[in-house]
Length: 287
Image (cartoon, rainbow, N blue to C red):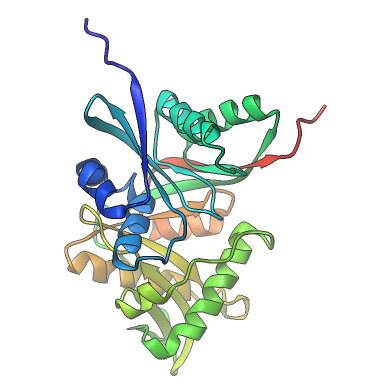
């Protein structure tokens, strides 16, 4: 049997080059690659919006067999199930002296990256979040009546959306997390939804730019004082159904430690299809 050949790593900051090389791979598994794809498409449409990006291609010969990204201040993101490919990314970042304080992505790849990095740097790793990956194989449904209605966010909503997204980011990732990404592309391109009651916004979510026919529902936020009334269910179900009517497939990620959100999304028709994890590196090994 022929040996498959060594893995080589190619890094570029040019989203167009990356999409030329790796676009077919991204579209072959659009759910797995959703986070990376939405970021590289954002970088292509809005040059300079993502500072110092590394779009990483893993090649066997001339064929791209895996991809990853590093967009500081966020940790490397690895939509990789192969530990071999994940370790190749870790070695490349280490060899180039790229500062790394954590990693996220599909569980097997992220753990392999973390194990190698921590052994190399004499660090420990803590799990920040376990995430469930969900898709929506049937029309979204809202199983109960909810007061109010949905509308697309408009430019005048930007301050509201920006503040809510920062609140979402802080609640999800903790007070020391990097700032939330700028939501203006999602708002200005008509991909953000607001649920209103009597003209008053009470919940929101957005859909990422599609890649391979898949959009990711994210930024689901209801202020604490408005919770318990079904607004998050309503905005996610209705906005997901709208994406489906556009011919798109919906997916989302949610914290597995939060049984409420997992139950909500399953009630809307989402099904869990995989897991990912985010890990943070600590300064020294314990013990």
